[in-house]
Image (cartoon, rainbow over all chains, first blue to last red; front, side, top):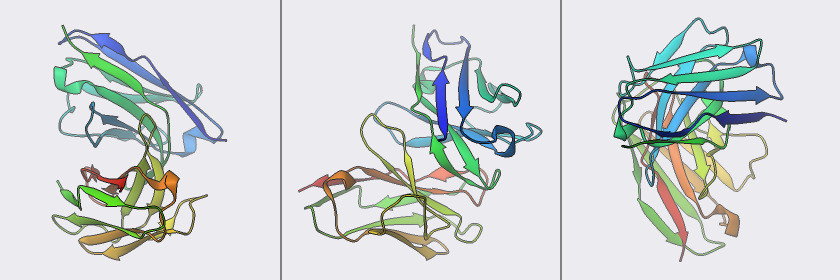
Length: 120
Length: 108
């Protein structure tokens, strides 16, 4: 059974940093691209970032480019999102998702999400 | 960036009725690289349809997807109580991936 468990969310001040983690199990982690998708309170879904199975290719949405860094440790079956220079508009539930088809692919399994709140 | 516009914003229907949800793209993208997700309050999204018309594993056959080019449709043939939720379309054929704003299917 595929399981994705996010952690690392919390309250952070504007301009601060936070690192999210996503522990994966139930599939061959290194064989799949992974993504982060976020959802602001009461709003829709926004794709944030994706990374190839090897970690050699990364992709970002314009709203986070230059501030967020996606990475993975295939030996630990864990996906990360380093978030710097956080802004109030980054407040959201952050989901990690397993992708099918690489970057031009869809997400077939999602974690339950971790809430990030950026506020002073 | 491709903008996906979903309509209607809210659909009020009774159990047993047919639901038809629309997703229109601002421009075309890689052929049929469109997915539909269902999200219930407090839960993560769940994949329903990929490739515009292929059902994901375990999805009942009352859910069907169709369309191509810039116009796509999700149909729920007969609404069950558990189908009342928000539905999102997503295109993954053009960078960056984008989502529609969602259609809420509520009980009438």
